Image (cartoon, rainbow, N blue to C red):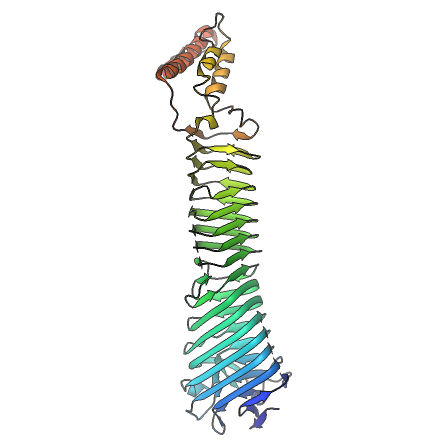
Length: 477
């Protein structure tokens, strides 16, 4: 049992417990006489250097107030205190240093070491003070403090917010299962392996870095977003390691990804997706605004492009890919899923369809004429002959024009695309097509002759004004 002085319990000297330590004296009262102070200097108590070591599990029960180091009234002495334990359960209030109102600038050093697992159901603070009537929050504990925790399971309130005490800490794995975990301006936290945001909230004052120890909040290996709330969404930096969205919905202004893997099973929206290396795989709903894509991106579910996106053959999709922005693909692209285009796509080296389907009501541009037209050049003369250049009996005008459009204009596609693509509106732009002057002249002549012939043969069914307008249009070709 701790020592009791003036109705308050103290760990007053270095103590080692070879077993478990269960401190749960308070039930309903907020009387300060049930506080536990691990080291303290005050009017009548001078326990300035105290270290408690528990070679087992330490448990602080509900409504229990424990402080690792305390500066009380009437003292200006230094305090150096620590708690080292294998496992720790906190259901009440645990303070990493506390002090009375009038002595908040007395030096204080406080340290917590949990080699195994810490389960936080209550609160972990370093601000405020204790009074006989309850907890106050108008004191900012000064000094330095630190902690090292193997695994932290958080359901409570982790908030070391003192503006006068710098806190540095390391956690092997952080599981936020509820409550809130806060990183404040005076905190520098490093999670060696993994952060799993399952529920509750993660609040940081600085952008999160994954895969490298950098800045005031960084993660060595893995960030899992599974449904909790994340306040810092302006920038997420991934140097290496893994970022996984396994549930919930998240929106980032910028995701700066240099290497490592990104996987999405939830709903993820990134305005600026800066991926210079590594890989990304979408198995949920992913929306990308702007990107000059490096590395690889694989879509097996729903991917939407809404801004300016440039790829170099490193984007593959067997799911549904919707382009509402401006997408430029440098290499030949193979459509293996569903491609819906309402924006602009520029396939700079052509495209092909393999077990997929394409619909377009926007602009589709390709440098490969064979993507759109049947056999240009090799069967060009047969096509021209077919619409009637050398026929003894002129074909009916409707049939001739239909054949003309089917053969030479994007309405019915080449045989390789029939049944796999649909153009409902918009434009199809084909660049890099070379026609001989003869082919060009023949095309123009056929169109003019057939079109004007139709109106001259059906004069009674068309107004003179309409004929004049259409004739001028055709003559301008």
